[in-house]
Image 1 (cartoon, rainbow, N blue to C red):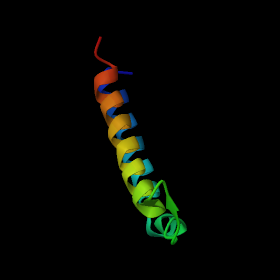
Image 2: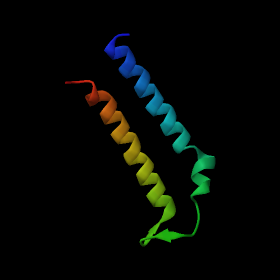
Image 3: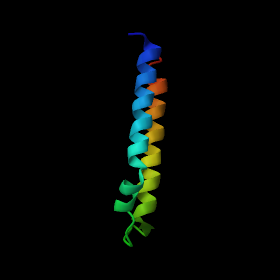
Image 4: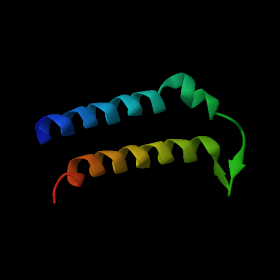
Amino acid sequence: MRQSALTRQRLVGVFVLGLLLLYSPVLALFDVAAEWAGFPVSYLYLFGAWLLLLLLAALTVEGGKQ
């Protein structure tokens, strides 16, 4: 399999993971009135999921280049 096709498949996987992480019923699980270290749990989840998706996309695109 060519490297570009594998990268494309992995990016589609990251996209689908992003859809699942940011899907409304999943977001509702973290919509509570709790705080952790002074930050609302929903904010931590949103920014954590966003950071995870960015890191996975960057590793997918840049990881294959040696």
